[in-house]
Length: 256
Image 1 (spheres, rainbow, N blue to C red):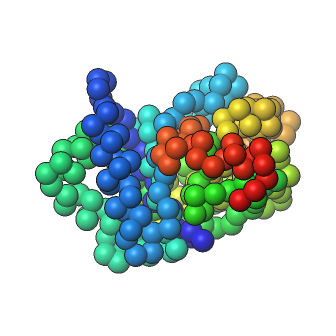
Image 2 (cartoon, rainbow, N blue to C red):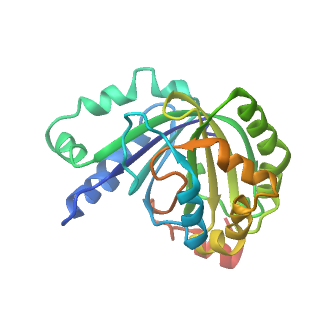
């Protein structure tokens, strides 16, 4: 169970990044997972969500705060409670790393972190395929945002409770959906949709999400009163742990 999630968005410079990825996947993230209370860690490459998602991206208001603009990669770390990240502060521990660790972390550009608590969640039809100790699924869409007014925030809560979360619980290709609220960082709200693959998201979720462009439906209100972080919503595929570890085999055989 992971009621806390630490999310870090960032960019990387051009060039040969093999040393960075080897360090992150073989050393740093496994070391994070060994810390008391940490349940899992995952690394995503942000790929984009297609033409319809680009239309939504272009419609959304963006934060004008002085926050990191990174949007190419996303590291997610799950913990039994968000307080795990503050006993002691895990951001200070990471910032104190020196040597190779410090050099690799220094490659990150426009880094932005947020610490979330799980407000509510639903499992989707593909939840039984979940493996890797509760790790987030091979493909995700993650939005992070704030609302413009209190009335908007109340409407947002109703929309998730009455419409979006129930819809995700029925959607083919969906593993789970987690509605998150911030403990520290920008922004206050986040939504993490998890899918078996990017293709499953494209086939089953894309048309549902594009309803946001129809001014006659409730979802359209949401995109008009939310202010999003850079790059939000982030659509990406998991590159660590490898996205094919166990999923294809299980989907073919049904065995865990």
